[in-house]
Image (cartoon, rainbow, N blue to C red; front, side, top):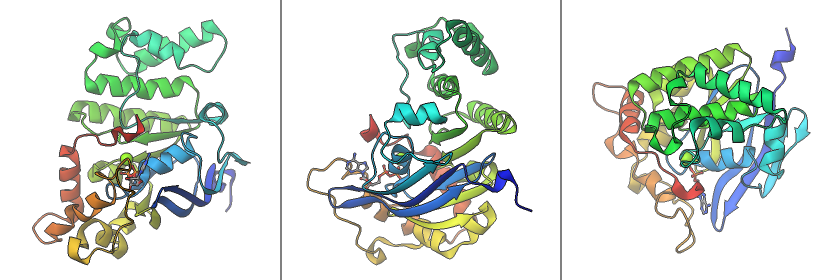
Length: 299
Ligand code: ADP
Ligand code: MG
């Protein structure tokens, strides 16, 4: 039976973004139904961060539509998209290191009422158990604590859809559990998530449905079990030896991202094949876990 929950909250049609000769996001179409955790996976350089940048208004698309809550927001500036209820974190956190935790929270707010802003900031700092650090400079927090505060800053904007770009990269297992708990709590409050991460074990356990990008193309969409069994996905992640790989688009000489873009796709787990006692997905999780956060490009 169709219900309001089946109507997409965010739908993308023909979304395309080029950087010189590189098509980072290539004619992507998908629809996110609300109140779910959606995963977005794909090898390094497959276009995940670019897609996030398009959805959140950091970048404008060359073509295509982004329909959020019934409005085509493609090309809108980020503050307007934020105001409509979409929040996102960055691979590299964007806290103000010279401000305290509390100040970082308060400046992120959209609401004009100072009393409401202050109350919400207090509530969220408490919610993540960082009360003791509320007057500490953000620059003095551990990496994991900074990630938590970055996440809570998004909540200050009262989003309905939350995009998390590699939230688990570089965080320890305790912080990892804490993030997972937070996501579950917020999901129960009605939020919708789109999460990208290299930590396959977490993505597959956390997400109800997963989208897969490869060279900017959406090559699969479905529940985690189907994604893990999908031949195109296995091929994209594990099966493609460098010699057998299709020629990736050539980045412009000296262009940004030329070192971590298409080239790294040829260098990914493919060379190991899919033999061995662990499933490829388990090994992908292990490899991803040790990978440092990448993508300073967006800074
Ligand atoms: P992912 O997040 O999946 O690792 P990205 O979206 O960062 O992938 O990158 C997708 C492709 O777009 C890569 O080839 C990358 O080099 C290129 N790219 C991304 N951002 C830029 C940019 N600002 N300028 C030039 N090329 C870029
Ligand atoms: Mg990225």
